[in-house]
Image 1 (cartoon, rainbow, N blue to C red):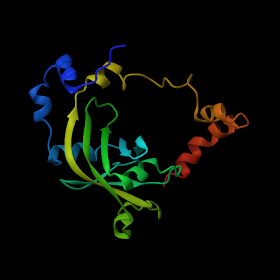
Image 2: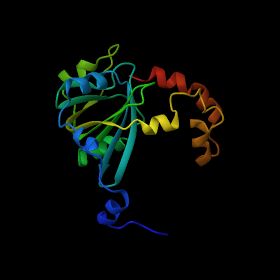
Image 3: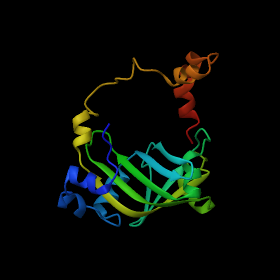
Image 4: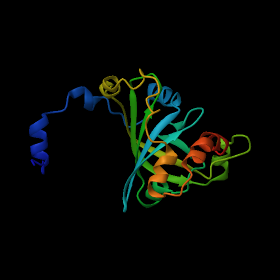
Length: 200
């Protein structure tokens, strides 16, 4: 097996980056990036910590983050499964990457920066939904923002197919695979209702 073990070998294999791929990177959220991010209801949050890396999907029924200013994003941490993988990493390290997507759009917006968790009541209150608030808000200080080449989404035709997940394992089946006595059918039957009711 041939393995690349040096940056010089890597760069020799792929060649130089196209100028536009470097020039497109900004160190702040320009008005156009603010507009695009504010339209996104879904992102993927990547973090790193002493125990390794973590990637977590985050979604909302409105903008998934709030643009505080050209250098700052607020991401409310709504109720989840309490694994806290991403939050532990943020507390211990702080480096984050965000990948924003909008259904139907082949553009992807990427943000790299540093994050911290805030429990400031005045901030959490800004995200009040039906009397419920996030336990904390992830404050992201933007270091880089840029759009991703659309080829990946175009190549996969992500938005051009109907539901392809019908024949795939369900959430309950994943649990039953490791816990034979688990009632996967009941779990899956109530999962969507539970997720909706407990979202906030």
